[in-house]
Image (cartoon, rainbow, N blue to C red; front, side, top):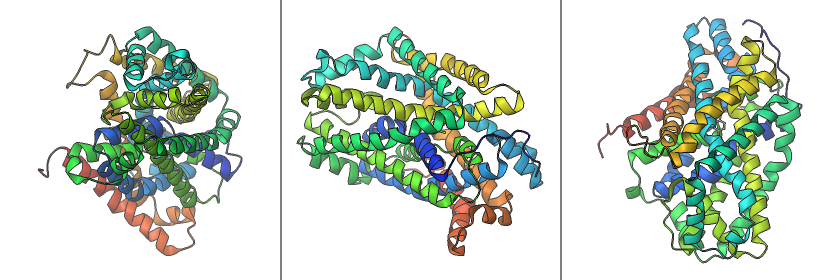
Length: 454
Ligand code: PFF
């Protein structure tokens, strides 16, 4: 294999990698997206399909992606290119890397707008407007906020500026420090919200909705949404885990780290769901509220709790931090590539790619107001970018990673990199990436296209 042309910094320890990878995984996907997708797609059955996808497809691909990153030690595009060259495979594999860079870009463009909502709520939630608020009042405030284009642009710009700032400070300076304290704090906060939800009067109904599968409620589109969400939430299929893997020192167990990260990610999503659905039912709301779900329901809790305003501020601050540690991962493949191939400094690379994302994000910022009528295939810019990335590009990128790690990379290399003590574990992983994960994704795609007729 050709030696990397460019040596990146490395994580200072295994824990640093785990924190950064969890930082990338845990984000708006868990707190904002998982609950509303579960709500839109019938609850329990969606959650069950989601969990199956995490275990049978997500974790094996996460291991594969980290492994390729650590072997290649470069940006995803160059890693794929040099590993393919070493294995005498087609140089076209580099396009899998490109697919990831583009997906990351597209995701960040709308991610930044939604993260901007969380930032805005840090300031809004503790105001008199929310004191003792009911469901209708909370919905009205959110609606006004969403439909004002100026607010959308301002908060989107502030979030993107924060992302550019952190990314330009580099691997250990910015990324490591940001994740270390925020994740445990977020977990604690969700726990408090779960306890509140338990006493809200809707807990039994909320739990039943989220945890008892009703298969009549799930469609092919719902299954595809669950699979897309598994990729999105774990942060897979677009090279960011690959870049993080490329900063990973040798001899850190990739398998154990991946399982740990995936478990933490799933736990946070379930905890968010358990905090939100009891409130939905206790207040007579419908779970199918779409992307506004957490912004309309949680403020009711904050508005009714004594000292809830401060509590709400802290909560949205943590959501903001969870979002920023993910946004940094979304842009990292592009930044790593620009520094390697175009010789740009990290700050310039971050500035250029962040600005391009910002511009693209205006499409989403306006999807909720002046641009809401602008539709293709009946979808707004936001919906289109979201579906294209989560339901097509990420699963496709993930399958390419799985196929590469399972079929192209030699057995000696993957075995050496994974250093599994038990040979059976290695065999299980290999079967999962060679057959199960690619076939699973294919079946879900075909099912969503209605090919199995239902
Ligand atoms: N996993 C992040 C979330 O759940 O919010 C989003 C994300 C980050 C997706 C990094 C993809 C990625 F590469």
